[in-house]
Amino acid sequence: MPTDAAYSPMSLFDLTGRRALVTGARRGIGRAIALALAAQGAEVAVHHAGAADEARDAEAVVAEIAGRNGAARAFAADFAQRGEAGRLAERIGQELGPVDILVLNASIELLEEYEGISDATFDRQIDLNLRAPLQLVQALLPGMKARRWGRVLTIGSIQQLRPHPQMLIYAGTKAAQLNWARNLARHIGGDGVTVNNLAPGTIWTARNEARLSDPAIRREMEQRIPLGRLGKPEDLVGAALLLCSDAGSYINGADLFVDGGLAVG
Image (tube, rainbow, N blue to C red; front, side, top):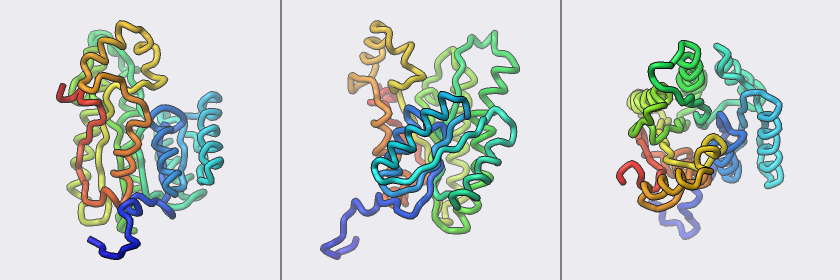
């Protein structure tokens, strides 16, 4: 432990000089994490899928970061297109430089009864939730290892533990993602790179707004959560900063729930 009187443990969270890619960062959890990383000094690539409304949201995130004297740029990439994730990594490398922090937040969930799952909906969820993250890891992890510093943070879900009956594919991809994070953590442990999973519980985001706006559903969910309230995207920020900075340098292969106790309630 440093003994210098000027030492501050908060300096371990300083990300000055680091570059981060946050996928699905135009709103919700991705936006909150992008803002937090930028506030700690990281230059952030704010990913969105490319539609006009998504581009506007992403540029608003960039503008908010700039308004706080941070650095960020928006990058469009539709992960439903095969190979687009790899091309995104290449563009960011050319335009910003090497990526030190990869936050895999973008995903899609399609509610269906298992009998009605089609090839199209199966493929779409696999492409966005597994194939694109794999391509980004393949593109960016070797550089982190070579520079001997890197952070990969996968954003999981309570669904990996308590799957919703209408989210067979989505929940399965989140469970697979956790397996990948643990697997990768074993392989890169000596290279200054960590890989961890951050699993949100019931978070009030645009994705969940329609369902959680129903007072009866909201009360039911709140009663199941030991802390007695729904989560907010900002509730993920502290854990994300820990796992993306030097403060979490000895945390590797972890699965951290931010769910108000839902996983154990």
